[in-house]
Length: 429
Image 1: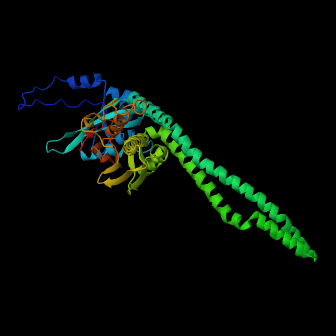
Image 2 (image 1 turned 135 degrees about the vertical axis):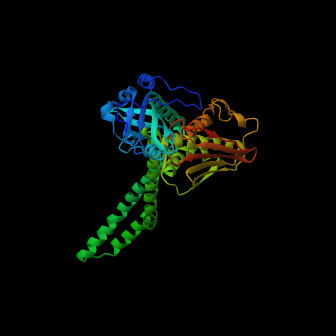
Image 3 (image 1 turned 120 degrees about the vertical axis):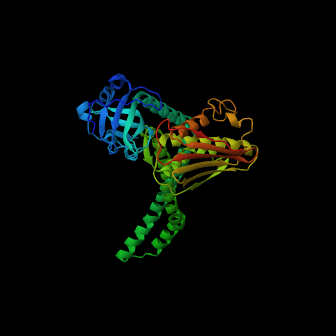
């Protein structure tokens, strides 16, 4: 076994390729001067060798890192206390892997790395070691996080008036219900006074006939039967209104929370439902929205990015339906669905809007391209959608026809491979 700091045997000449063996020490010199961190690990994940850049990046010197678990040093997404199982699986299976991981240096500082693993096969073709190349991309990841956060806050700003209206409506009927209950208590108090006088007269053995008649008149004036029937309904209305306000506030908090910018395992249906709560004012006047949320396992993704995808697609659908029903009293339909398909999760947003003209379809994902009126669109919605899908290594397909409507189908891996995992975009007429 080669230990940390020992030189590797120089490769032999390959007569089939005609390559001569490099001069002794040349590869060691290249490794020492390489600006990228290089590491060699065995199938069990133990570090066998690393260059000086690896030591500088991790803070672990040559003898500190020797024999350490490479998956134990590297962590996927935000699981700060859990080693990256993906890296361990690749090492054990002798598989190539390209992903983005996080790492805590020896001094506790967190860094983000692009990792490229390459298996080295032996004479019989079985992987005996894996070579890892690591590049520090912390600044890129942090910049992307700040940009994503800014985009979400901008979306909240764009939704502000609608969200305010959504909050004002339940607050209004909570206020109306509270006023009704206050008036009801006043009427109830006026009916209680003669009833108490009647009770005192009966208890003392006095004539109760006139007091009984007065109590009956007070009960009729207060309309106690009506109060007893409607007071519970008013309380239910208060509770429902406060629940609606609470749901909107929670959705806003989750949508704009900084942790939403990091890769994590989430309940995707909860993310979708919360985003639809925020977007309700965008579609409720022009379309009836239905959901068909399937039974999904936990999904590893950037929750804030997926929220933005749902918001942008539903907003676009609402605008398309609004154009289709403009000038009529009719309402269109928007359907949001999720389902699991093998190792992927599928999210679809379908509408009965105007559809996308054929000459426009090739450009819909281009940044700043829009066919909407001035002030209604910026041309960044679908570009951002594809950007988020790309980061997750997913795909987006479009099925549209003029006059029939449009369906966007987003396919995401259950375990996203990290930034830059690849892009697959499709369009169907």
